Image 1 (cartoon, rainbow, N blue to C red):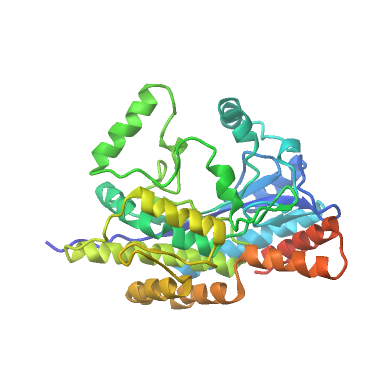
Image 2: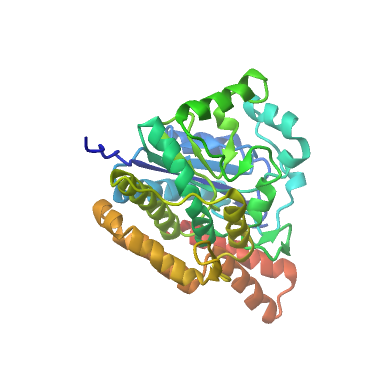
Length: 377
């Protein structure tokens, strides 16, 4: 019997910092009117985040990337317009260039209060923003099967998204310092592997029955079956400053899942590699972004990222054509050519420093670039 094709619907969630347009620092306690105004215009598509200095948006369930593009553009534009009325601006980046996490305030909601009490210091450091992409897969067994296989590609997607080179005003030397902060939490990193949906649920139930978690939303893996929706949710990526970069990564992730489904349809599958190997590529993507390449495990060698990207684009070419997102998928080559947000932030900082600006002035210039680029929709 032919394997029925999933709908592969797509939804995109983005987290933003709210910054003061004068100081360029995060606003640790935005006025409640700001969120109320956003909610009035974006009912059900905007939410508070763990820290009050952050805001989260989410597209509707979209059948096409063109639909997701229009929705995401509308969300970014609306949040920017509302924030401007309050003297603020949203910034899409994994970390803020110089904000101090220890001066920020958590949102007063029971869920966040419980998180704060449970996570303590590692939770208070969560001044980070990510990009999450949901792809609809109604079959639970298929979600688990693709969870096991798609993990291989997560470092490749992370490398394209990197936007967090700074932390508390310092160049960390990492292209995604956000991941270093997030790694301090429990139940993070690469997902476990499971033979079936039933095995996955049994493991979740052990944690729930022991009172360790309320439900599977507290599994903060880089890729996870969503607890609330019939989707496989990719969570490894930094919040992408540029709208087109976010759409490109979302398109690639969706295409990769369909590519893996096509293999399954032909009674094939992607080779499963040990987590210790994939973690090496995860670290390389976190540390270097696209600069130093990733390991091709079959060859046992580090391969330039450009070659790996060409291979991925060739693999998913039929799927990009099927979804009508060839332009978005191949935009990844433009990201590679001109640099990720992390590269571009560092370039702004170095340019201003070379021109005589002090550290504070150069960091402020980075924030100005982030504000302008986030709003360019």
